Length: 87
Image 1: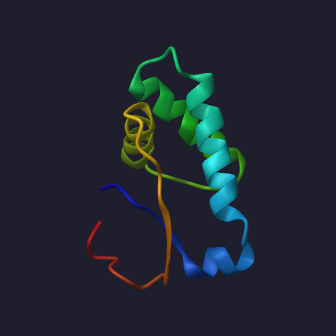
Image 2 (image 1 turned 120 degrees about the vertical axis):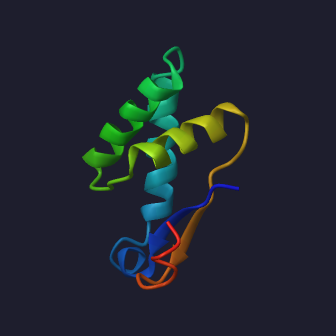
């Protein structure tokens, strides 16, 4: 299962970050529905950048693939130091 993690510190400053991420992700994927998963991931990465969120290309591709498979995205809140070595 792919989970997308948001640090607790970001969530404290932007409590609506989960909703923003979800909305932006759905919009980007809908806009690029006729494109390849890789192209859709680039659109998603650019859209997220517009709201100040930076995700790796791999994470964006994973998000696109999950949504296209009918799965949901889950954004988890964690402290900045937890499990940094496990990326």
